[in-house]
Amino acid sequence: MQKPVPNGKEHSVNAEAFLVSKTDTQGKITYCNEPFIKIVGASEQELLGKPHNIVRHPDMPRVIFKLLWDKVKNKEEIFAYVKNLSFDGGCYWVYANITASLDNNGQIVGYYSVRRKANIKALEVIKPLYEKLLSLEKNGGIEASFKYLTDLLREKGVSYEEFSNNLQRL
Image (cartoon, rainbow, N blue to C red):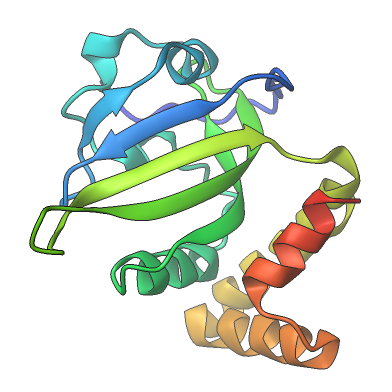
């Protein structure tokens, strides 16, 4: 399966749904629940063993994934807004909680993500922010978007998690 090509169609996540997936330490999908399978528009067989980034939308700023990986590799959880791709080329927005899965010795054995429908009011802030971050990345690399995001959060006096949690509660 090749990575889908975005077509501008937007899918709506059911407000009651929890989209769950697990990956191994290499980011390959080891588990996905029915709501995740349904919104992606794939079969379980098409997803299992594939890199999770098969659903990464190109509109996602790399800096958000940098924050995400910095946190989970440190065994910390993160909450983040993510725009993902469905296999039909459509997209869907989620508010994701990502954590490391640990074995009995505290070693990372994979990653676990539970996603909910993103708050529509929050997306009024997130979409233009992510567009700005993407633009900065195209011209100045991830360093430029990281600086912009860091400065923005410092100005607001919050972490990214506080920022995103506050938006989700709007």
